[in-house]
Amino acid sequence: LSAIDELVGELARLPGIGRKTALRLAFHLLKQPEDDARRLARSIVDVREKVRPCGRCGNLSEQDPCGICNSNRRDVSLVCVVEEASDIMAIERTGEYRGLYHVLGGRLSPLDGIGPAELNLKPLLERIGQGAVGEVVLATNPSVEGEATALYVGRILSPLGVKVTRIARGLPVGGDLEYADGVTIAEALNGRREL
Amino acid sequence: LSAIDELVGELARLPGIGRKTALRLAFHLLKQPEDDARRLARSIVDVREKVRPCGRCGNLSEQDPCGICNSNRRDVSLVCVVEEASDIMAIERTGEYRGLYHVLGGRLSPLDGIGPAELNLKPLLERIGQGAVGEVVLATNPSVEGEATALYVGRILSPLGVKVTRIARGLPVGGDLEYADGVTIAEALNGRREL
Image (cartoon, rainbow over all chains, first blue to last red; front, side, top):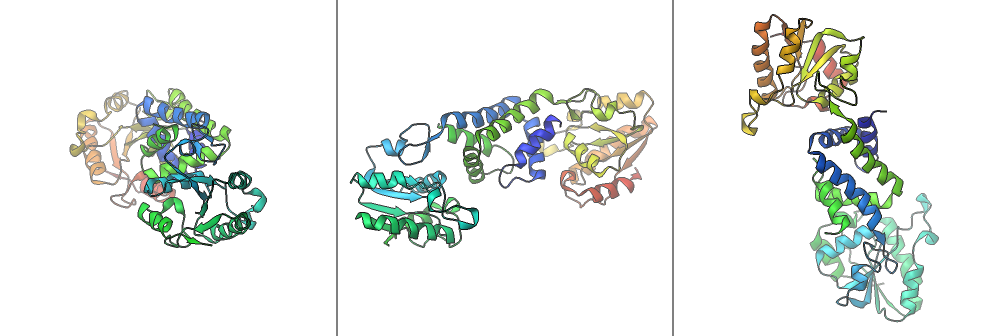
């Protein structure tokens, strides 16, 4: 396999990148200044070397605990539960949320073989057990799996004496939190209601 | 800047990749096995280290002269002139063309400041001067700039006693050779006519 074919193959493995786009990107990388291509390669290696999940909340960060867990300007009594670390970035962009996070690392999806045991719930239960958490906002995606996950997590948390809320259905049903605009996400956070 | 922001910035510089797609790709690279991410980074560096323009035709290749120039199964009397090396791959995919190539490295585009001096024409004139070339097929894109480039190159070549043809307008006008399907490209090659 030639170096170009090799690169096209690797690029085509990325989500949403087909063979023609991969080919176009490969030729772009060959045409632009060599430093630019090297910087992209370096960034990919860097991100894998430096970025790790936060031991406390699961956020992807270069520090452990992450900047959000470590901040003394956040409301430690409020924990927002999300499916993936990328959802944290979407919520942070709104600038409307001042609490902490917890990343489940997925959502209940029987068809994909993801059951309750696959969700990262234990650290959240431990945190609640320590007593500082007053409210948990369930911000899983407004999809069928996300709703099921929220219901399941809510049922686990309700006996623990903590207030459990769900972000409002301001988000388009069946959509993906990562793609929603900031105003919609902020609306959904403000309109959260007790489960 | 964090490593994630850095990577998102580099990815967003690629053509057709916006900030949201870049973010999605960055998180994908963080989620997939580390080896996959490293292989992509390695491929980018490799392609820049190994692939160079062929000294004879300008094709991007790991050998110089490239595999097409070096092949003894190609018709050396036929030279196909293309705008970019990526167009060669599009034509080769049809399996219909058995001649050699010449890459102009662009097309006439006064608005972008690309005039006749910016086109890589000298090596083609030298090759024709050596006498082996009987026909030159102009396969620049069927766009306004591509047509202008074909007309210009045709006018330069016609006094040299070589047959000059233009690929047929089987390609959708205003389109891009790189995106055309193989059958259309093959049709256009077969239907070429003398300028």
